[in-house]
Image (cartoon, rainbow, N blue to C red; front, side, top):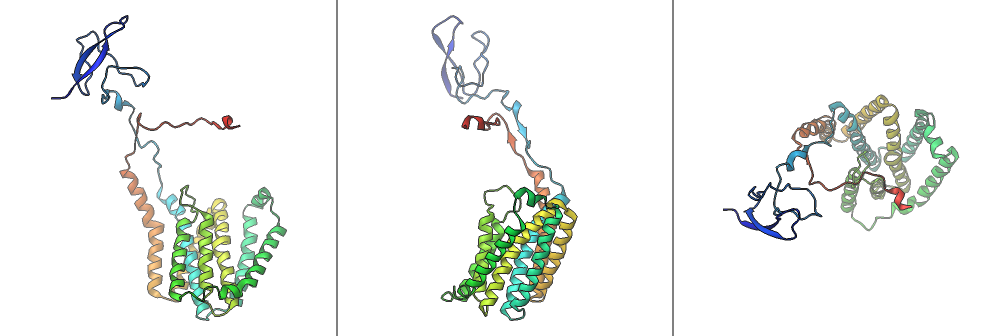
Length: 322
């Protein structure tokens, strides 16, 4: 038996008093007293219905998956190139550090090759959009040159300090912190997603912190200078060029990503064949398996929307803030 509730019902349109009527919970009042009242979705009017009453029209406004995005496989694979770029950047940085730590690569060669590639990328950065981005920002070549000179001067001047900065910390701790910082760099990097976890500033700072920690374990201060400079080039300048290529010349971006991945795997293969194989499987998973899983999981989405949703103000209210 359902519980019996008492609710006042207006006897007649002109009456000032109410009578009590009993009905089962969740059921509208019977038609014994004239025509049954009609339920209204309002809060400012007293209605002869229990609090848990659900009208038959409640689900008429139910909508499913009205905001679900439809993904295309190759479009998702293209977007995954950003993740592949950053994985390869971390891999190349680690390989270069290992070569310098084993004294297989001199800091002079690293600085020379890095300078040549930086100049090439600088010219390509302006050539991709015919300098439109530079004109919009109002930044001149002279301002870029001054910033580069200031950075090189300060890094070279503080390289002896960087070399001895972590002498009191054990090498195992340095390696552990570097791994955590590089993982954090990958997590917080701006891959183009509008998420709260994204922080470009935090990402680049964690990468530079990792480079400083690793540079402090290199043989000489010149090695530390070359390593920190290379970290700026690959973690700050290289992603900027990739974003420009991705926005203006997609096929060039795809080609550069492919050859960069080949270069990263070749460098890792020279150190460890097992590591190169695992890294190759990781890239394949990110590039092809993860997009496939994402598209397949879209079939199981079942988001419902209806009158129970919170109200959203879509009108521009900025005029009231003046």
